Every structure is written in C-alpha cells, then in structure tokens.
Image (cartoon, rainbow, N blue to C red; front, side, top):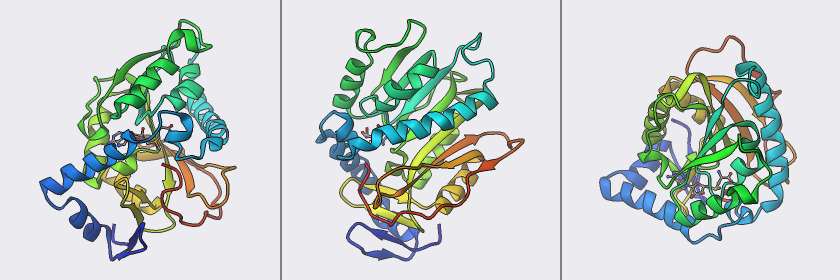
Length: 277
Ligand SMILES: C[S@@+](CC[C@H](N)C(=O)[O-])C[C@H]1O[C@@H](n2cnc3c(N)ncnc32)[C@H](O)[C@@H]1O
C-alpha cells in the first residue's frame, strides 16, 4: 500500500512499508506486536461492552445489518439452507461469542469459535452453553479454539462461511494473506468469507496501544488481490453513531463471482482511531 497513513498519535508514515518495517521489521518486533495485541485484550472485561470497546449499544445495529447481509448470501449461495443442507460457520476473533450467539448460531447448524484470549473464550463457552440459549438441538457451538488467526489452519472443507469481524486489523499484511490462503482450504466448495471491518478514509491508521491497524477500502482490495479473493458482495454498515469509523461488510469468494452487487457510495465517517475495538 503506497498511500500515507497515520498512527494514533497523529504521526504520519509515507507508506505502509515504512510503518511495517518499524513495527514488525525483525522477529523480536513481530513477536512483540502480537504479544501486545493479545495482552491488550487480556486486560479487557469479558463482556459485549468490553469487546466493543465501550460501544456496547452498537451491538443491535451491527447484528441487524449483518443479518440482512447474511440473508442475501444464504439466498444466493446456499438456497437449501434450513432444509437438507447442514451449514457450518467459523467465527474468527470471536471474543465472547457475541456474533455467534446473536446471529450465526440461528443460521448455522454448527459454529466453531476461534479466539486467542482465554477469558473471552471461557465467557463464549458459557454464553453458548445449551442451557443459556434459545436454539434447537440442531444448532450448536461445536469447537472452541484458543488460537490466534496467524497460527490457525482449519480442517479441510469444513465451513460454508468463515466470518471475520473486527479482528483482522491485528494481523500484519503478510499474515493476513497467509491466513486467508490457509483458510481457503477450510471452505466447502462454494463457501465464502465475510469480512466486517472498520475502514480508514485513506491509507491506514495504526493503533499503537493495541497494535492493530485500520485499513482503507483500497488497502483491503489490494490485500484481497494478493489472496486471490474476489468481492462477491459489499455493503456499508448503517446506523452507527457519528464519529465512529465507517464499517464495511465484504463477502469474498475464491472463484470469480457471476455477479457483484455493491451498495451506493456513502459519505464516510471521520477518521477516529481506536473507537471500536
Ligand atoms: C473488537 S473485538 C471483536 C470480537 C468479536 N469479533 C465481535 O465482533 O464481538 C477483537 C477481538 O479480536 C481478538 N484478537 C486479537 N488479536 C487476534 C489475533 N491475532 N487473532 C485472532 N483474534 C485476535 C481479540 O482478542 C478480540 O476478541
């Protein structure tokens, strides 16, 4: 990414390479990047408000738009869902299981959760225990993996949907690309990724406190190209308070899509680092 970016102190980098060299330029720095990232979340309360960086009230709008997006994907890609098709999803950087509990478990027969912070995963296990949720026997949280994305390789052809929300900013560009390349193997034929993320107005914004970056739409598109992924559908999140980063939902396919639908371009929210974590 050849566009300038900022860090959370307002310092400008002339491009992403300059920032990455400084942040993860040798093995020790890279180890520190991931240690500090997970360490940040280890100090956060295991609650919906905690994983949303104190913005718990955005949960409802987030789930509402995610559900509408997921419904269009299910109708297009999995028309037999709910009849004889057994659907399996992976929730990446699942936190306390917020997305699984409020959305994925209602549509997928099995959901696996991947989360590197053990007290979040313990809370997810509790939140998704059969006695604590209103879903039938045919819908369950199946596996809980306490692993970071950069170290995870899924079982081959297990998932219809791999959902990656508000966590990919913790991965370096190289780990982003190698994660999606490994994760492709975990998709069933016709399976898709959903990436839901904060979007910088241009370039990137580095959060020095939790070692994550918010990328621009263009930056994401460059990385999707490097991964050999195609945008199947794209939608903007609506209804978030002003002052937060814009948020986009990308449905990504490994094959060139037959048709692409995109929402109309919207006015983007002001760039403010570290609002939603
Ligand atoms: C903003 S929270 C979002 C949680 C959840 N996706 C949600 O939307 O409710 C970010 C999550 O990313 C997780 N995370 C941090 N570093 C990660 C990594 N390297 N791989 C996977 N997840 C990571 C954090 O532990 C935290 O649960």
